Image (cartoon, rainbow, N blue to C red; front, side, top):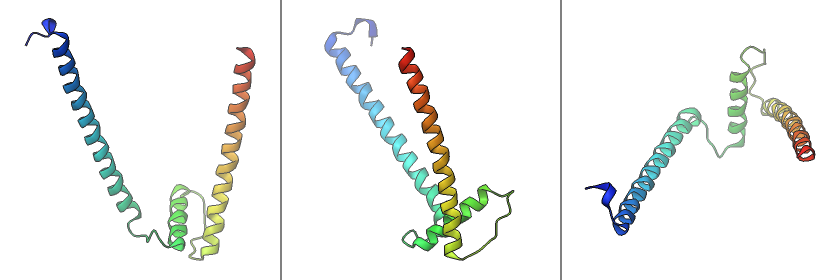
Amino acid sequence: MNLEKLSKPELLTLFSILEGELEARDLVIEALKAQHRDTFIEERYGKYNISDPLMALQRDFETLKEKNEGEKQPVCTNPLSILKVVMKQCKNMQERMLSQLAAAESRHRKVGSSG
């Protein structure tokens, strides 16, 4: 097959075949990603009952505890204590996000006024 001497209909056929191959490849990649994600979630959170809110709090507390290994935090099973720790973490994250949003808005105003 001489690619330089293909007619327009032949080129269109070739492109449609290649497009189909790319779409098939993308579907396989997405399926593999989903399978990997499901495996990761099962390995990470399989021991928790996802319909139980107290277990979700326990999972979040354990995740926070793993992140803050250097800090001393009491190990407790009291759901209210766990909720307080998770809420504190959420408030800290909200404050960081608000400061980042304010900085982004400030940069956007500077770019808009100089342009």
